[in-house]
Image (cartoon, chains in turn cyan, blue):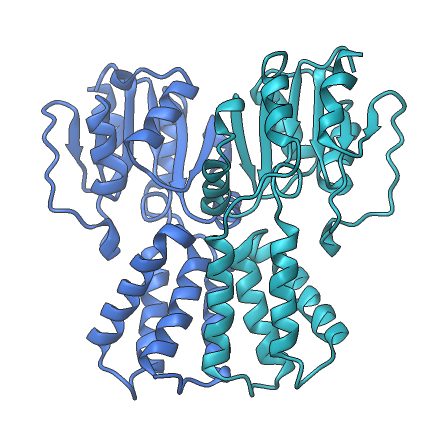
Length: 231
Length: 231
């Protein structure tokens, strides 16, 4: 990792908490529909609706809100009331106004690494919402560029590396999702540092195991990064 | 305009039809709520909800869908049915799958100008939806860069000009919205070419008149652009 000159950071669940907010809303959602269906059915149906709508809506809270309303109508066979749908809208708006809570060690690690490396923030989701979280995080000043994408795949990373004239061998991506943050970058010849979050959204789960000796590191905490990059 | 080296193009209602799709949906929306309120009340309340939610949702179809559902609940005092809300969701999904219809003269004009100038596409809205429209338009190859923004104001244009090392004096922005496409660019010292669309969303209307002699041109059609830039 000594050749690393540029570090990309995922944002949600890598720099700040995100999936725990969705998890709280899922709990409220299950309770709202509990008189109609058990929790497993609610979860499964909502996830299926989200996957059906993903090509149309993309990632982010607004698409989640719309899929949650659609699923509730389906699961209640049109018996859900307008008040309950307004409750779902309010839950979504609360998510969009939620404070940004940094993960442990993030601020200190970025301060250290900003002195030795060029840092990029690379995230996906709703444009406005991601910009709000970056602004609220207080971390924007540590990043040379902030890239908000509709999808994090090989093509998207290749475009970013080309745009900023970064060779894959000098690039390391740090994130909680093997599927979105690590595997596509390894495939391009870059490095990946995986820092798991305690919750993973179903869509981000993968059975694929990184196979890139010397280019993949598994971390327990983002705090380990500066020492690893100097060693 | 002879110094112009780089031309920025707005997308919705400048390169392809957009507001007419919203207008068709508005008509269906008024009909759905006609038993509760007159059309003017429906329009006024929906617009007020959209403006209230704009800081949270940003621009685009998904935010419109959520505001339309919220307004329908409010205007019917919770009497709207789940079926009717599903109808609203379907209308929104149809918008997101709508074919992209180029405005008259757009393809020919871009082909001509791409031979003499560097072209940028600068639009705002939902990331995924704008990318879909760019792809469906068949115009992507004419543009050096495609910028999808959450807001089109002076700061956003200044960032783009800086990022691409463009001096304001060599930049011309072409678009249908004086407020979003022309006035902020004129304020930075760039040029603006206004090509009106026959419909303008309330939020894009302005009473401000461009006051930048020699840097502002009013066009009836995008077809006039190549001759003006050569003259």
